[in-house]
Amino acid sequence: MRSAEFKPPKHDSSIRLGVRDHKDAHPHADSKFGCNMPRCLDEFFKDVRIAPIRSSAIHDFEHCPRKFLYRNKLGIVPLKYQPALHIGTVFHLILQALFMGKPQDEALDAAKQYFHRFCNKLLASADEVGFTPGGKSVEGVIKSANDDYHKARAMAISFMSFKPFDWSKWELLYTPDGTPCVELLLEAKVSGIPVPIIAPCDLALLKKGTKDVFIVDHKTTSSDTLARARAVKISSQIALYRLVLQCHLDVWAEESEKYKGLRVRGSIHNIIKKTTIKYCKKDPTFKDYINRVTAWYKEKHEEDPEHSPILQPETMFTEPTLTKELFMRLRQQARASRAAPSLDRFYRAGDYACYQFNSVCAYADLCDSDPVMWPDIVRTRFDIEFREDSEEERND
Image 1 (spheres, rainbow, N blue to C red):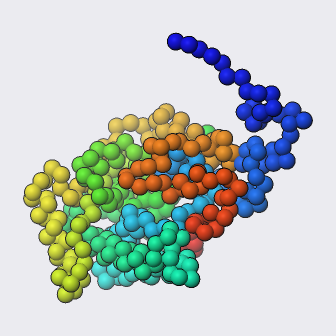
Image 2 (cartoon, helix red, strand yellow):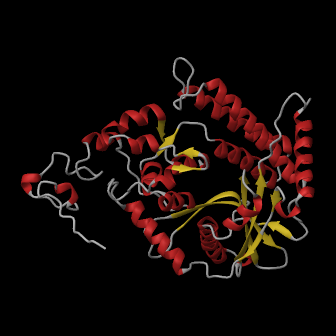
Image 3 (cartoon, rainbow, N blue to C red):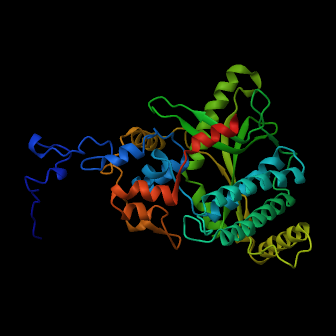
């Protein structure tokens, strides 16, 4: 094996880890985005956040640090239509209403209001000839979104028709003020981690006659449900949900006797495969469409029960609530959240992150471009929006 050492030229101060002689000083050297970065980035991205720790932020950072920078610290959100996000949102909204005891019509109405807001935002982003920032016609995107909207509604109603929980064994967990733990946004602080942890609790159930609390998480997927079930068991998401909910249970126990001794013992994942049945002329009414979707789920389950389109794997926790592994990941995430947005620190991970699930990363154009072009690209193809801001608006 032949070995050699790289020695950067004296004039190439950019390689020397930010240490430069006065004679090498660059007019953009003091940019918060790193050495030799254009000043326009500082002027355009005035709001650089200390991103709270959440499972999606951990996934972004570990998958590609640059993606974490774009989405979580700078708030850059793609304007293009994202089917998986759209279906998941509609599905969660309906289940939220149904688990809170609201009638089916009211649950469907909540999803309808969301869809109207979605369409209005899409129309507002279109140019004068009716094309979205992603280069697709508004008419085509709304048609696709409408198909997915109906599909998600039918999936949620069909799922609940199978009576996923035996309420003789389970009961909803409530907060001390009487709020049901359904789509409840919780925040916790952990000693040694200088950034708050945020976790939305899809559903929390108490096993009757015990002190055992179970976290319920809803997952819609296009892939094999059994494979998805194996992956979610070790996800950082469920570990964060457990940690944050246990923190609140401990606090609630100081306020009320009925919470004393309650422990988050396990998790249940509702994994629902996206149906391939479309709402069309075959269905005189939406109820007829729901019946067809329900029949599809029954048929697929009978064909292969092991890979049923609806699975509810239950996992009992055997490790401590805060393991050393989880603490190290949280500490690493906190460093990234608090760090200056230097492009050298938040590097691009590479092709495995740029191309996944048969699609190119939504941020690929930013990575391919000179940073001086970023403000123009963001104005035309992205929006600046921080998730925590929209969450605060919904809670007000």
